[in-house]
Image (cartoon, rainbow, N blue to C red; front, side):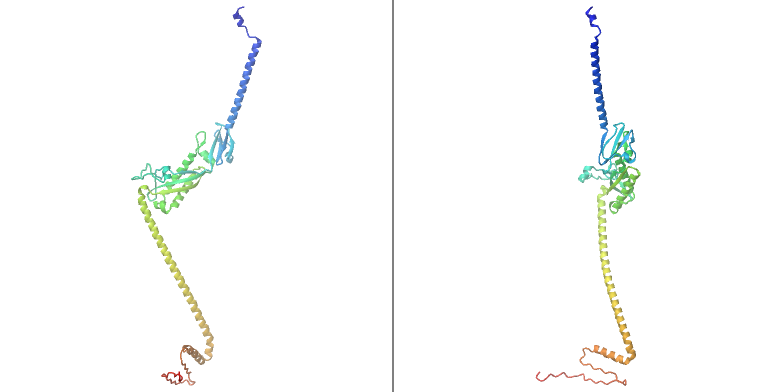
Length: 366
């Protein structure tokens, strides 16, 4: 038998068993590695579904585009939560207590945040440029600059999530809410300015104009079902920069007028106060005099009433007594007093007086 024929002999049974055992062990090791890899993959996939909701957030799980849970139960509060990974579940988070701010985009001239922080503004130019300078028209057909800064927070997360979920993955879009609130502020500024005169907006009825803008913004937000609540609306209004000097002169004249009116009202109050005090004093004096006169007349009437019976019983005697009493009062300081009562027969008495009385002589030696 040749060497070639000897090399083509089939392997022995011992060799076949060794090869099978090696292949089996290799396959077994591969299956172990695959199982371990699959277990690790499952753990990674499940762990990827863990998410955290912050203390100022709410979250909702969308499973194949539909919310998990009903009513308030679909909202997840702060803490750790789990959901299936995408594309099975989609987690949508939304801030609920953070105050958001947005400013109107109409009615104000072109400026930058850096300029506003520095307190500067771009040059006014010779005239208003509608391409860069926003404005509103007032009820008396004047032009002014005005803007509103609205502060709001999300009050109904479910409404906000479903109304402002963008794309097929329902990712919440906070910019959508900001744009909607900004549009409401723009609408409110233009509409409110059309019902107020320029002087009302700038000086006379500033608070009323601000309230009108805020009420309209709130109404538009509520009717739009944005799921937010307006906390504050700050309105700032200024005259066109091109007419700044003219408006300054008008403002100065108005201030002078108000000053004169205030001074006149103060003088009016002073005069009225003095006149009122004098009238009160005169009235009190007259009332006092009236009371004194009434009391005097009443006293005299009482005295007359008491003396009347005496007069009626003996009029002549009463008359002589009253005459004597009266004369004693009248002649209090008279040196000599001579009283001549009427004679019983009614005839007059004769009285002779020596008026050239000699002066009294002092005693001798004095």
